[in-house]
Image 1: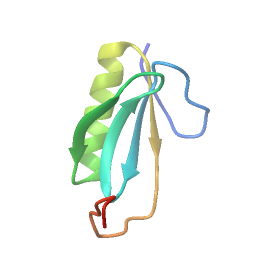
Image 2: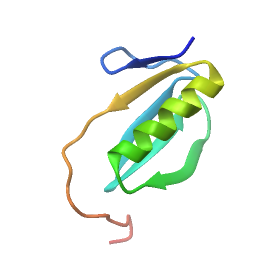
Image 3: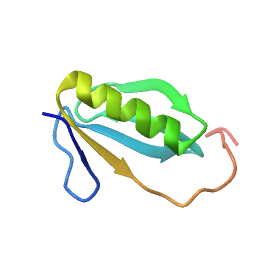
Image 4: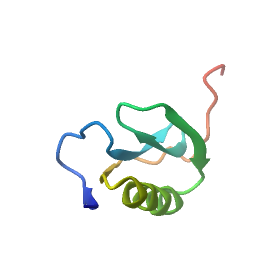
Length: 75
């Protein structure tokens, strides 16, 4: 069963949508991080929700304040 959550602790297999260095990414808890990133929160949430539905897991969105800049770790 698929569900969206925002306050519960994520479990292995859940899909988390979060901001990372100014881009939105999806990752599966306990799995390898996906390399796909998104410029907007909405795109990432839609993709994360779809991935969670495919996996039969929950989707958790971690909100953060937008910085307006995409940064690189090397900077």
